[in-house]
Image (cartoon, rainbow, N blue to C red; front, side, top):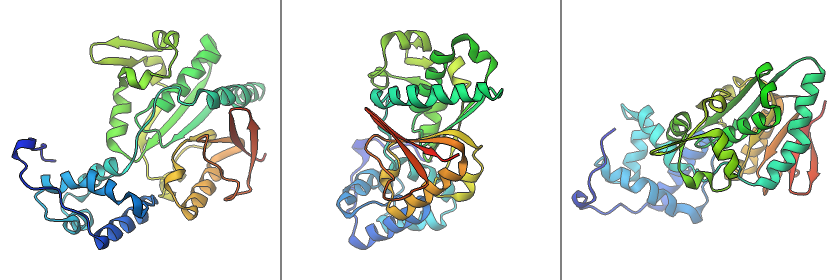
Length: 292
C-alpha cells in the first residue's frame, strides 16, 4: 500500500458519499461480512474511507467500490477496508461483573467436568477478538485458577477477527496503559512485562492463544474452528441484523460441544432469535448453555 501523504500536501477535500454510493457500499459490506450499517451512520463511511479515496487518487466511492470488486490489488485493499469498517474498542478484563459470573459459574465448572472425565483439554473460541485483550484475559484467568497445575492441561484459545491490523496487534502482544485501565495492578505485575513502548503480555499467556483472521459470515471458515467448550462473542452480533444473527447463533451451536457455553456482551440477548440455548441468569450477567 502507498504511504500516507502528509496533511499539508492533501489539497482535495474528502468527497461526500451519495445516497446511491452509500446503498451500494452498504450492500457490499452486508453481502461480504454480514454487517448492516444503518442510514444514520453514513458519516462513518465518509470519515473512515474518504481519506483512503484521496490517498489512492480516486474521485469517488463508486471508483473505490470498483477497486474492491475488480482491482488488481483488491485482496490487499480488502484487508485495509475490513480494518476501517470495524469498531475495536476493548480492554483487558472488560466488564468485570460478567467475567466474575463466567469464572464462578462457567469456567470453573467446565474445568472440573473435564478433569472428572479424565480429559484435561479445553478449547475456548474468542470470535471477534479485536486486538487480543479478550483472549489474553481468558488466558490470565486460566492461569489464576489452575496455577501450577496448568502444566498438565492442553489448552487452546482460538482468537479470530476480521481486521488484519487487529490480529497483527494481538500477535505483537504489546499494549498501552489505556488497554489495562480495568486490570488489577497485581495482575499487571504477574502477567505483563514492562517495556519502553508499553506492556508486553507474558509468553506463558501468549502461548495459549492461537490468532487468525475470520469472516464470521463465512460458514466454511467457521466450520474450520475446532469444537469448543466455550465461545466468547461479546459486543459483535450487535452489528448484524436478525437474519445474520440467527445464522451466527446456529453456527455457534454447531461448533459447541454438548453442554458448551456461549458468552455474549452484557447488553446482547438471543431469546428472540433462538430457543436452542438455555440461559443461565446470574446477577451481573447472562450466559447461554447448549443442551447436553
